[in-house]
Image (cartoon, rainbow, N blue to C red; front, side):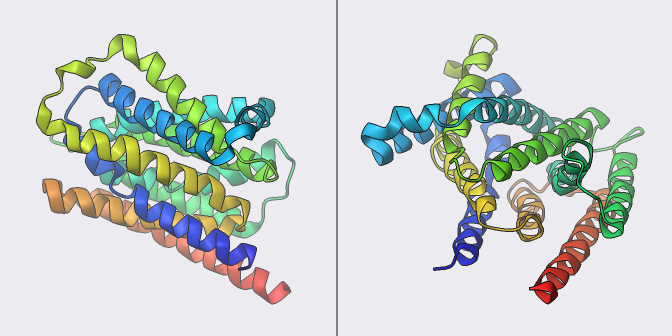
Length: 290
């Protein structure tokens, strides 16, 4: 199996696994601190136990092998988690996922500002049109009777930035597995949330979504999404990640009857079409050069 096919399969499975994440967070029906505690503590322990069983005697070596890059990535990933859960609980799920889907834009800006990589005209046009879509979504969150909230939308932007930085670090250090960084990050976020959480206040009917999101969806999805970009070009990863922005809101709309609203649908469609066209153009150009 080629590296490209391997990365494609891993990333697609990761995206499909992570799509019910937003729905399960809503179904827990607890405050943000409690959700963060359960989701991150369980997923962190699951990831670290999985790594222990996989690496066995090399477990400690692999944990230390992430270096300072892994530590920084873990901290940023934890901050992104806080922003994501706050956004899911304080604005429309569609708003959150459409805005988070713009993370490739931030990755391009980071490459330009930090790594001094040239930004093409296609990328600048993608940034401009995507920001127009975000502005439409944000406009729908303002005013009396709005379903979303500006605070939740801004938190989603914070998540997009955190995801972009994390994936940039993982891709720059592709020779090292950053899954240990995700495991440590999740445990760290759970420990920070514990003093403010009320984990024992949850009733029995919340156990199923807690277990699903903490032991299956979050750890498996996050791990696969960190592995995939090691084998795929950025444009391919960006296209595949758009699946979550499409399927995630559909889960919530179907199960909880949360209609995204006209502004969100228009702005979201604007963002998704812009990113899709941009990345298709990038793929065609790369294959012509090849």
